[in-house]
Picture 1 (cartoon, rainbow, N blue to C red):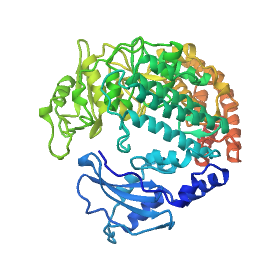
Picture 2 (cartoon, rainbow, N blue to C red):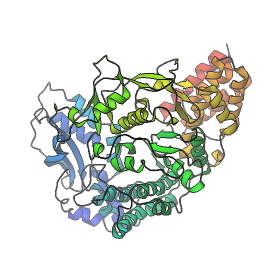
Picture 3 (cartoon, rainbow, N blue to C red):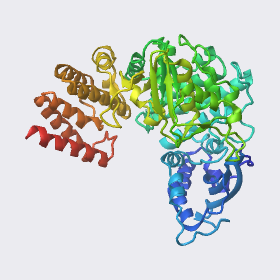
Picture 4 (cartoon, rainbow, N blue to C red):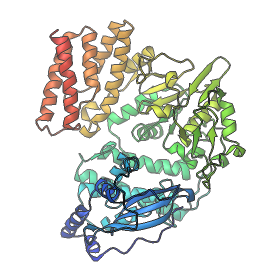
Length: 609
């Protein structure tokens, strides 16, 4: 665990910024604007300095602190212990200072390391917060902003997220950036928090929710990663709900949903995801919006409580896994064979895959091998034992099926290991689904066994032929039934325009079904699907996505030329409005121009040919 002292004293200039009057709130903005951007700091460092001589297991990191930008070295062989830290850009000087690193040689290439540090998620985090990248960063953000009454939208968002981070840090150090003595030492059981700990958790959880409410009132159109700030507020309620479901009990968790309000459209989308699942299914989800609204409609609306929802990000954590070992609402417990002890702490946080082996191995046999502590690999000298799957070529065998598949990544995280464990233990007895928001690497090589059935993909036992590596099989009968008859599309007219990006989920699946039906010669059913899309996606929306040109092509291919021509006219006008400075723009100009280019090509090919 990283051990560093308390943050350095804030300079008088920064201290004055923490005062609550409007003039000093402006000072906060001015001082923060003086900080150079993360990307510029990283680029400046690597233009001058070399990291060629830092030892194996160590990595360079950057930290945005009240005193300025710091450069540090963390030792990953010692649980991210900090072994070096110096200021690199001084807030008082507003300039770079020398650090104790070797100078870069003229021909030294460090582009690979530079690319890694410029990961979009890292860059985004440094942009979101006034301070970030070191243990206790959120406490410094809270200290800077909590007494200010007139914060900008972005600083209110940063304060809310910092409160939320502190609440989470009280329960666990999963993010790895927690200051000393913040996280409670809690037993791996239900009702883990005592009354004082529970009250303190709720204090910061409530502060996060209240700050998001301030932001919703101040600017209801403020955009965040999940869509609108209203959606983020609702997700924050469910975050607290899920925390207390894991660490306390269902009754205490339910209290966190008081005042939680999702839009009608998001509730409909959550219901449609659950409608897509078979009875008693296990559903693997990927992000906030395909997880939290689903938990809400299950818990508050009593809808499809038989489905067990497993978020793959959270499935990397021990506490989350352990709470899934018991029945939740009407959903049966998850059939894990991996014990608590086998995933204690960082143990089996990831496992390597021996891709050089051509030997096919039964999945159950591979899992037995990985879970045997005697089979640890000792090549890396880490304090936590490392394990390797003996081969990438695995096969799941049941009484009436045989499913060979291949792991295509050099390693898998614990979440992938848990998927494999569920497969080996469950043996396809219980239905398994993946939300359509999952990326391919989450499928652990099972892509060819997945079929679109709605807003989820269902895992089957027969491998399906795909038209390309990017396309997955379409269960046209089930998907047709869901899209045309079963799904609830209410509320789309009243969506906040920042949530309109979610409409692309619908447009994409409508296109997949229409295209599949046309390839099967089912023109009438394809027309039904296209007319349904036209009737449920509001025309007044300015949101565009990359499925629109494909859907226009589907109309032409289905013999609906008049409707295709009308769509070309409608969307060409909308696109031009966006390029002329339309206020409800979600896509940037380059994306809009790319869609327009595709529509223009379709117009030439189908309208005037």
